[in-house]
Image (cartoon, rainbow, N blue to C red; front, top):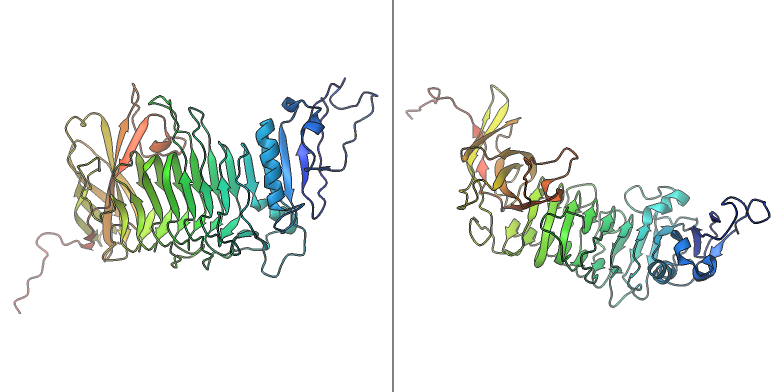
Length: 494
């Protein structure tokens, strides 16, 4: 086998700079004469990969394409890299990367802007990643407030930033995507049968400028998801991430930040949605922070900041099953924080909507420095007493009316033999309000392990095999007051 490792990157051209090919050789390190084989200095991605492998596609294991120009098209452009990846990676079934190596000088803004004059080609390649963070390897961290590459669609009359139609295993990270007439990122992939695929969106700014402090709105949604669910899966299948959206800024978009029309195994974590990059100041999306449509299911939504969006923080149609929502900061959204059914407050307990917990008291005790919150779990539906485990998540809020939200997660309580519960928080929450959600956990397998909010590996239950979870809306808010022991209340006669 002859291995070629191409290291040289030439400015202003797109090159296939890393690949592995094989040929019939007596030794993988030498050529036929016994001398060390010298690789060529560069291989243009304009050349079909078949010519590099002698027609043996099985010899090719990986390819890396370099974006070295901010031009809309031509050699070195992102458009050319995508065209080449679509042609080669899908055809030869190899893993591909698109890296950004735009040469200096860096613009005074601190970032490079790729301003498109027509939509990029749909991404059909399998096993493809776009790595915007790779630009820092050449020019350094020139934009400390955000990514160094801005994909700008302000000149377009129609189109999305990235139109992802890959059948699976696609990743994009480290880009700013804003100003597009439609969606920042559109996932519109075909049905994949029983094949497990994954999509990852991480560390991007979507709908803002590269500083994360001003809107560069995508006129429809930040991320729009139309992924066909997997079929022919056994009921106890391991929850494989179909779509993970993690550690992004998704703010300033014309409609929802994340819009899911259809999709399965949806994991949204550690995003900032509706706020600026590093502060809690509003930078709202024009509709909901996250919307789940009737054809979506099986999701985890955790550790996000979802605030100041025009309509809802998180909105779910009533028919959406198995969505776990916990440990987020949901505050200041226009209509309601967490809404199931798009009808504002829903007590639950019917129509497949989990019932809300009821909070009965919240008192701060100055003697112990603790705040004790009391409440009760909703009644269990008939037949579920031995099949489910319920958890209540508790939140504090600086607003007297949290509008169906929860600002700061305090902890959780598991249902015991009694419906009543008490939770003690070490700290003074006097004057704040408390809200809570309840998550019902069911196990679909034959032998149910004892559930806990997180596994030993740190995974939520919704990412563990066989567990199905559904979260209620937030409870009515209750104000934290002073604790006054019996016999110490002062009565005034005037």
